[in-house]
Amino acid sequence: MRHNSYSLAAFAAASVPGFEPARTVAIPTPQDDVDVAGVISQEGRKVLVTCPRTTAGGVRLEKELSISGSLAQHALSDLVPAVLGSVKLPEGGRAAVTEVHEGAPLLLDLLDRDRALVTSLGEVIARIHRVPAHVVETVGAEAYTAQALREAHRAQLARARELETIPTAVLQRWETLLADDGLWDLRPVVVHGDLSEESLFFHGSRITGVRGWDAARIGDPADDLAWLASALEAEAFDDLFSAYRNALGTPVHPRLLERAHAVGEFAVIDWLLHGIEAEDDVIIEDARGMLRDLESDLSQIAKDQAESAYHSLDVHDGLASAPSPLPSSAASPAGSGSAVSATEESAPEDSDHEESDHGASDLQGPDSEGSAPEDPDGQGDASGGPVRRGNPSDDAPEDPRTF
Image (cartoon, rainbow, N blue to C red; front, side):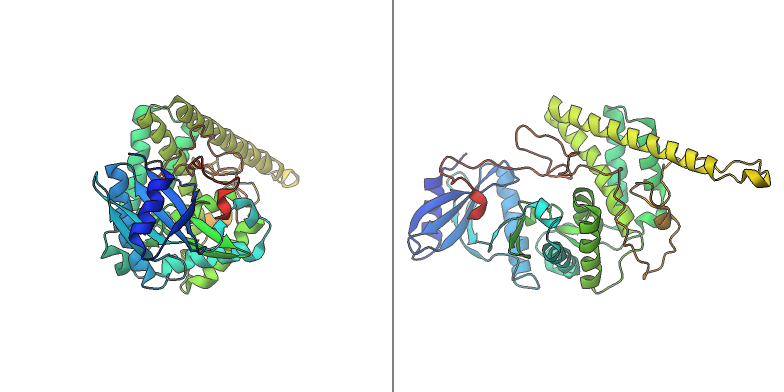
């Protein structure tokens, strides 16, 4: 059931000793089955109240509280807010009251303009990936092997093929990526799993908080980088990836950046399946449009490669042989605009290999710069689709981000 702002304020008063609510501020959330509000006391103290509307929302909230509570006691105490209290709900489950992050939810366009902010985000993601696995495993986070992660992508693709016609060139590319053992020879780490503008907070040029830990798991580090590789300008992402690599403390996988682009493309599959499951024709058509765009990009890359190969023939030496045909993966040479550069394709499995090229890819998954789905309901896919955005309630100020 839905809980109004008065109920959420009452939960804050019941959970925090001496807290007397004065007003509430609706907070946007990427989840559609929880109510979230900021509550301000008469003394100006701020807390965040989260209350599930459904059983599923309650289960997810319990998982988030367990994981975030464990993280707050370890290396991420400055990024994960402490739980101040909770109230049992008559219908089951509980509402939770937590401290409020300093600052406001992140705006992606700021990252393209503020080098210090994008560097801070790269460092924060590295800190998440450095957390020891047992910190989240012991409180319920799932752990996946490298093989299981690859098989999950294969299963999603197989299911999509059963329900929808995938363009041949796109299908060949994805199957080739999934058949590449070197690409998936990764070491799983702790990942947030659902980073978005709403889950990241900033103040000035610094990331100050991370919320939404219910999708945290032991998984592919590319999952936390894929959306940024798609959304940011090339120079901004290069700064972020450089900061991430420097702060990680251990060598990155030599093909991590390539895999991040691949994961970004696979998000189209997740978005398509989400639309099919929800029987939402708008989402389905949006995903089909993404597939058509990707097919067009692959066709243009193949054309560019063919023209480049033709012009590079040494006619003066009378060479009669043509270059080898375009690989079925449609991976382009460096500078062609592909998400997978020739440098990355031929890179040795060297732990010190530098991955400084962002790729400025035409082969990217959903992003916030024009290829992301236009979601009229404000609800996106929690499993790899575009970020879902909640709508403020009637008592929200003109700009709820400033809470």
